[in-house]
Every structure is written in C-alpha cells, then in structure tokens.
Image (cartoon, rainbow over all chains, first blue to last red; front, side, top):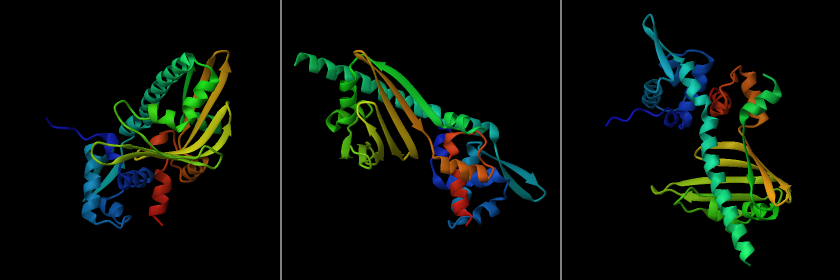
Length: 110
Length: 154
C-alpha cells in the first residue's frame, strides 16, 4: 500500500516550516530558497519536493524559471491544527476526569 | 484583526464539570503521584522528572516512546492560586513550544467547574508576524514561521 505524504509530517520539520515562511512572503525559485539556508542545495531540494508532494507548494513555470508559490487551500488544512490539539487535550482531560472519580471513590472509602 | 479575536483564535478552551469537590480535583491536578496516573495516553508510562509546584518552579514530564524517543512536556509555573487557578508556560516537544496553559477550578457545591485554556504562541511572536505582514488568520500552526524566517534571512 502506498502511503501518501502527511501534511503534518511535512510541517513537523523546522527547515520545511522555514521554507513555507519564506515562500509565504513571495514566490521564489528553488535557487533563491536554497540561498537562504546553510544546508546543501540537494537537502533543500528534497525538502521542497516533500512540500510539493503535500501540495503545500505549487510550482509555476515562468519562462525558463520555476517559482514556488504557497498553496492557500492546502494551508487551510493546517489552520485546523489547533483542532488536532483539541482532540489530544480532550483525551487527556477525559483521562483526568476518570482519575478524579477514582480518587474520590478512594477517599470516600477511607 | 482585533486583539481579542486574535487571542480567541490562538486559544483552545475546554470546559468540564467534574462530579467531585474542588479539593480532590486540585489534588489530582497538582500532586506528582496523581499526575503520573493520568497524564500519559492509555498504555503509556509517564515520568515526572521535575515538579516544583511554586511560582517560578519548573515541571517536566516525559513519556518514553516505543521507538526509544521521548515525548517531553515541560514549563514554568507563573501563577498558582489554590484552589482557583494555575498558569504555566508549556512546551510539548516535538509538537509545539511557547504555549501558555491556564487552568481554572471553580467550586460548585460538591462539583467543580473546570476550564482549561491552551494559548498558542505569545503576543510577541504575533507582533513579529504582523510586522512582516504574515499573520493573516492561518492560526497556530504557523505561529513561529515568521520569526524563523526573519532569523534565517539575517
């Protein structure tokens, strides 16, 4: 089974988040993006490729150059990140509530 | 975007009513031996590495992952008013950093009204983002991007 790239996995990496931040300001060529980092150009290309596979970046050909644009539609998915946290916190607080009830029962027995 | 809307967008709020008196809820939330029982997701173990329950005190809990890595939560208490409220900075590595947690306990007879706020990113980050024209309501996931980009482009 082929696993599709996960958008949240894509943005879990600080370099990739930095790339998105740069491209959010204005569309950039791969060379211009790579020039912002100390990493090898190949490494940055790999990051760009992953972001492109998740459709966070869209390449647009202008003459002989490719400019990467940020994909606002895809970014919308990420905007619900707080909701991801909500689920985690709700689980944690449910677990807390169960524990509070256990503790209450224990104390009543004493 | 007004400041209050902005704060709402960055704040995750969960309210609950517990069928237990506030003393028990407070104890379960604040005592390390209790925290160890509920903090970790089901089937996982939590280590309470540090738990200095004072204003300015540090807390750190780790959850070992099956692959050998650790999920680390830590922070510093900024407000403690027993048995009403606790504020603390918090990092949840590797997920997010620079979060503020606010927990309110309100006595309701033998029950407790509980409010949990998790505020993503600080005002400072948002100001930086606004300065760069980046903050446009995409929300918390990219709270630190602008700061990072400005650091990288120096």
